[in-house]
Image (cartoon, rainbow, N blue to C red; front, side):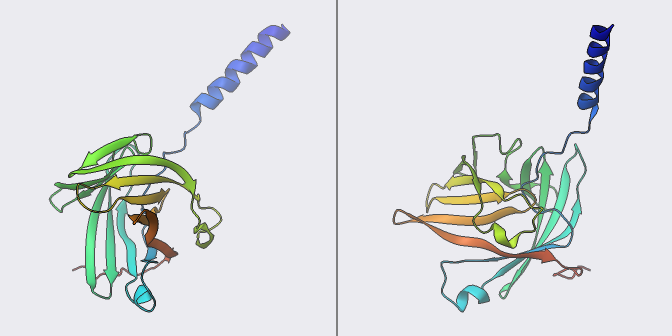
Length: 200
């Protein structure tokens, strides 16, 4: 009888674990409405570095499990403003036009399990996981471990970008004279109530 109860208990535990909702795969891009990220180029001297800061704000997002989801990012700096529309699906992120036409593949479906891909003549490869050195600016609940991706364009410098869950790019470096130089870094993160760009 004890053996039967043990088997039944094991089966019930196994079924309970199997039926638990699985956590959704991480999204390697900003998607929470109102999330505002500030970036600067550490390779620039001050005060130009602060003057050229870029603000990226999630203006609108429709995130649905198992379906393509759209996120509108509003970008602004002292030189102007721009809106981008990104489609998230199966771990991939695609830049799309207002007509839905694909303009660029930022991350492929299945990321970060995909070892490499090519988009518009640039070869990309996943370098590996790492803890972001600038994670002190993130809340304690944020995951500081991200994925480095290297881009090798046909012409120009090699570039490595670190993507964190729920934030996307937090740091990018370029290979200059054999040294990796940081050229884009997240320096502030918060939430704003009003859109940075007015829409009619």
